[in-house]
Image (cartoon, rainbow, N blue to C red; front, side, top):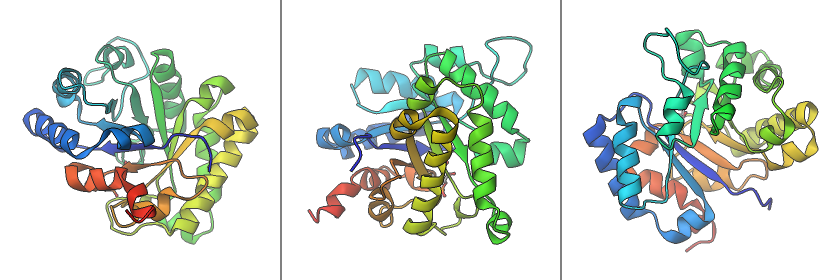
Length: 262
Ligand code: 13P
């Protein structure tokens, strides 16, 4: 077992208005125990319109869940209609920012270079990037999964200092497993997360590779979380659909209870 503390993150995507968001975090606070958050870091990533409301509830009720965002721009301010600055997120006590999610890459044309600029900007604002990578079904079929994922990792980490890389999070999310109910087998997920760690080692050194946290994402549910989470190179999960249900998300965070049979 490594001493990397797992991070389980709920990516709410474009779900939950701010009233629903408040209810969801309150429900989550009833489900999670102190032992859970001692063992596992937990973050929630609501849509931008909910962040202030969720921040207020987390703070007022002292809920030990970190606040996250799903996206940001790389510039600090300027004429970028519709965009949100990393400084604005940091001011709201956001700790983790997802960048390079496959939905941003595939639906909104985000490039590896954009992702790298975001990684630098998020770190500069004092937050932690959760940088996503992952291959399509066609790329996996064509035996290109490794090349695609290691290429995304190299590009995303370009010119990031090794000590900063060490504190980052990378989420390996095979695109064919997102929202489809098809999960990678624990062996495949482990092999790809090991590849991500080996790539980090090449670009930022062994120490950074040993301490960076690597999440698996793609149809993570309470029933498959224990097997995935106990793989040596998997240090957490990036959860979409199941994070919208406090009980399901809580059970994923409590994966270790299943593991120990209690
Ligand atoms: P699902 O858990 O709904 O497959 O989504 C995964 C994901 O994209 C998380 O970022």
